[in-house]
Image 1 (cartoon, helix red, strand yellow):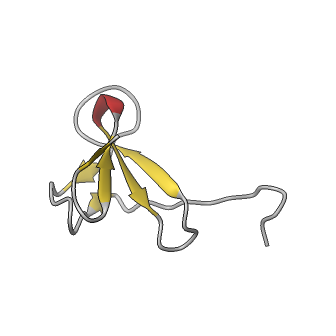
Image 2 (cartoon, rainbow, N blue to C red):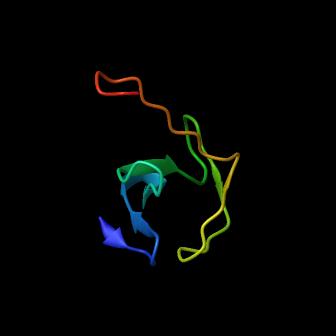
Length: 64
């Protein structure tokens, strides 16, 4: 996983990863062309914007 900028890391298959300011975990967003759900990405690794917005939810055993 390579560093793309202050906020993003690169992954396989058009994926980018960001460290979530809400939960502190790293999340993957798949961008660009290809099969499956894809997000638009403004191409700025230091101030990324994804469309539509990214909603992360968690319902694991330690969820509030």
